[in-house]
Image (cartoon, rainbow, N blue to C red; front, side, top):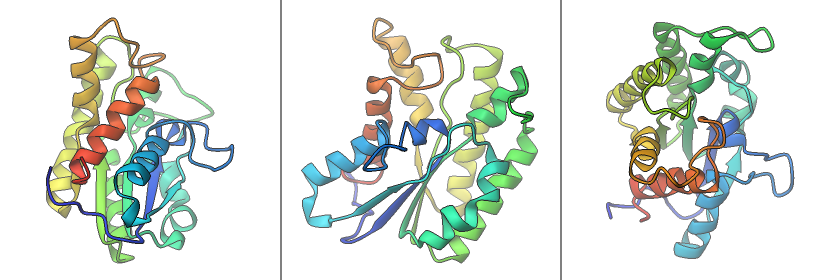
Length: 211
């Protein structure tokens, strides 16, 4: 276990798409995915930290939608720690438009992520955590999943560039689907099952120095 990057009283904001959202519309607003698992384990393992966990994931979001709500759903909330997981929908729209949304090319995706990160750092967010986009299809090797891998590499690069913590959620999902194919890790190739969300939560807690 590395040094824990969380401090007592931190507000941790989780941002992203439906994988982060995970049905957060019901009280207490954390959803039933990795965010809720992270909060539960933090309370169990590090009750001394007394962190405030906030979920603002929105299903269907790409980086443009996230940028459009960044002020109200991130900067105005003044988090100490920002955890960002975005990208599968930027890629997925290549398979077909949804609600008028189109595919976001890799260069535009990178530029959008840089804007999100730079605004967050300018707002004095202390710790940035970038989670890899994971998978789209049930097969580990497919055109869409291979493309997500390029977006993952962009997130890894930006984590190095901006001194952020990188959470290799994509690697965790791919490895689990290879090693234990009998386990349902995603419901449709993209959205994690309970086991898949647990994988992401465990990876997040390891990289944050809690596990």
